[in-house]
Image 1 (spheres, rainbow, N blue to C red):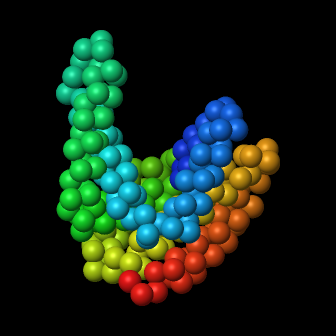
Image 2: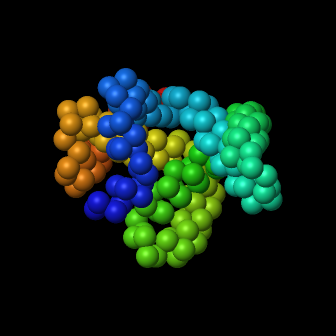
Length: 196
């Protein structure tokens, strides 16, 4: 369970603990918004996912093809530019945005399952799962977005809440509370989007 949480959240718990109470509250609010209103705020989340994908691609490409001392700065600048472009594209091309958001969510969750010694296999399986979930998301937009935003939002909110009360030692409890939040989030989102 510890490996899953570390892989899924990355350095989020340490960042939260080191960033002070304001950062923890921001992550808690964003997690709760995503958990309970993910589908309603779908254009925002889709644009955010487009930005993250563009940013990461920009940084990876620059780091792969450039060998100058300012590589990190250039990578971040190109990443920001690529992120903004991808966010705009994701927003304008809604179904592509739904695909990107859902694929990104699936990738991060599936990749997190694999332990460090099986990361390469995890990447392959996560990419395949991301493509499948992205395709399913285009076909079934509402349920896939509700489920994916609830799961990610629930886990982020749970992690932030436990960091806020300074009790992050029990990863299983953090995940169980996050999944319970996700279930409640799915129910709430289905209720508030019933007519859509």
